[in-house]
Image 1 (tube, rainbow over the protein chains, first blue to last red):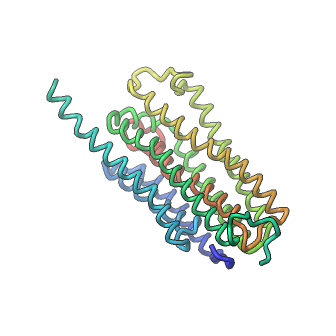
Image 2: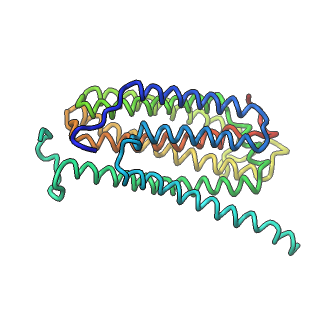
Image 3: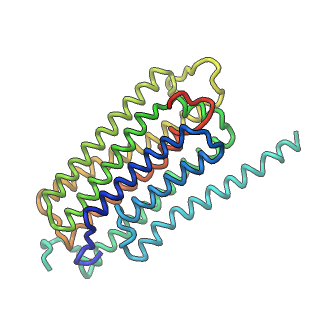
Length: 101
Length: 219
């Protein structure tokens, strides 16, 4: 952030808003279809896309210093490590429990 | 330098440095918030993988139209907050205050719909620990879904209530002309907080309301 703030044109905000509304309509509609395991993947894909739009434009990450990029990505990276390792744990437990009866 | 006197704390060399420090601090706080809500999301992932039928059944009771409506309300409030930050970048204090006021009205609308949903769950006996009498034949692990539902949406709503207080303070300061294009990091940080609250809901909505499964009764 400098003395001259980077002011985005209004149309950027309205375009992002319309994309978010479209994403919400899409995710609600897709949920009414039976896509098997793909339902979760599509729902999370849409939510992730919406989140990136909010972060890049509403939160100005795209126009922020590199240090802000590091901070904004760090939390997500740790969360993914958290989820992957804990699910690796739970997924490995099932056969062990089954084997010991 | 055009900023009001007293705007620069003595341990900073310039308002720009002070604003950057505040921004980085806010992002560090938000990274911590990701971990806070992350713990809840991980709990959700683990229990849902263990009891998928209970989660599908519980999700089926949630009103998708109200959830969709609230998602739209929150997205709109994020837009008005973004416009408030933009107005403060341009030095338009009163416009900033008005956009924040609209954001507050939308936040109250969201909480109104949410409390209506909570009341409906109370009447249906779907509040674990306090008023729990699910329909006969319900999944024995249904309480896990509803416990997570109330803790996750409750923590989210609590963040919104805190946000309402912060918005009131910043709107008042903006109305009184306490921010300038060179020194508006207070509005900026408020905006970051509010967009984060929006981000959490963007994930909560599909994960809680839109699970596909045999329990789905809406849509």
